[in-house]
Amino acid sequence: MDSEPTPTCWRHPAVECHVRCTRCERYICPDCMREAAVGHQCPECVKEEARSVRQARTIAGGRMSATPVVTYVLFALNVLAYLAEVVRPGIVDRFAMVGSRLTGPDGVQYPADGGFFTFGPVRVEGVAGGEWERMLTSAFLHQSPFEGAFGILHLTLNMVVLWQLGRVVELMLGRFRFAVLYLLSALGGSVLELVLTDPGQVSVGASGAVFGVGAAYYVLHRRLGADPAGVGRLMLLLLLWLVVSAWFTSWQGHLGGLLAGGALAVAFAYAPRDGRRTVVQAGAGAALVVLLAVTAVVKVSELTGGSVPL
Image (tube, rainbow, N blue to C red; front, side, top):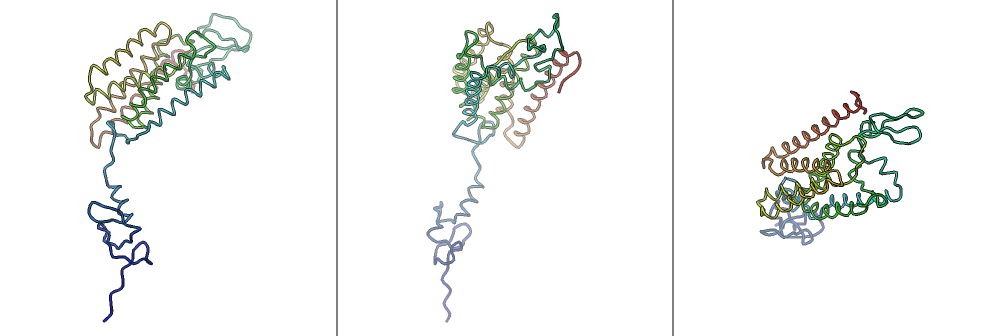
């Protein structure tokens, strides 16, 4: 009588074995055995089971992460931009938030409403001159240590708040949603500055984005049912700083960031927790982008007398 062949591992045919994978029932050798709830499984079945397990999600539906990478990157970008300002102060003049100003051939800047005389043509600078990037780049610049009494304190205050609140908000939202909220808060601050301030006023700072992060911190903790007194104190401090800082900073930028960040955080936190959540959140983000873009275009059209530079 012929004896049955000795079974071998399906992954290592040269190795004899007598244990089957409890999931696919193929023979596996000791090197391929992986502990399971019952018996052992092969590596492929373990991977397949891991893919089928529902991944943990943040309150907004983002992927869970233990490391706030986006906050670290934003922090580093702000610090690097500040160092670049120290080395080349002209960076601030080129990338700061300016609605509209006129510059003569000699480099002298004039008010955008005219009332001056110069030899040679003048050029329009700022957002009204097609420099739309200023609305975002200005959020990574801060007051130079060589100008004004605020100096390095401007950067320090913003980075302390970003470090303390940004890490928490990022872990609650997920990396992608946090990055979107930060950037749209920065844009919200720039748009309100464009609309409500003197077109020739120069402004820099991450304050608008930081105020947006602060608003998101409040909204997310209220969504989770946190102690109202605790998060309420934070919001009270933000509003108090908004009022006090109006004497020496751009309150318009602070308020714009607060409103944009708060609105987006509400959409992220309270979107229905089903298949519609991503659609609702993306729709809210797109609506905010459209609102900011239309507002900026209308204001620029007003500044330029009807034309909108691209």
